[in-house]
Length: 153
View 1 (tube, rainbow, N blue to C red):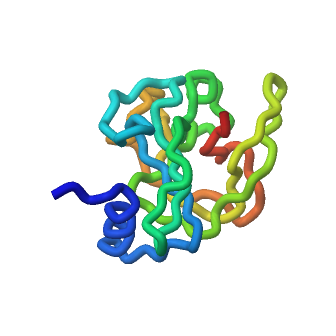
View 2 (cartoon, rainbow, N blue to C red):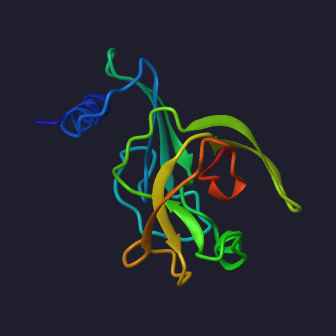
């Protein structure tokens, strides 16, 4: 039996005790935006999926390519001595992001930026893989450009 994508998301949220908002943003890492089939992990690729959906209506509004992982430049030019931050998987953050600008010497782009504490890993060995990296709880509620996670293409 095929379960519609929005229902599958709602069930996943329920299984994890997460409460979806009337309109919810969910990210899938290493998947294609059409059928959400797995893709290989590749640095500097928009190979993740941003899903904007309405749980109550079981409606997917948008499923599009995105990125949730730091790129090669960020990993190899760390802003934190412990490594570049990568968000923990299977984690629910209800009010941790707001739309804003990520501004550096080389870029000025729209992004979802951190505005609350989150959990994730720091890629100290610069291998782009969370396994073996130390888990951190970062952020104090103040904006922290080092913790930018989601680029908006």
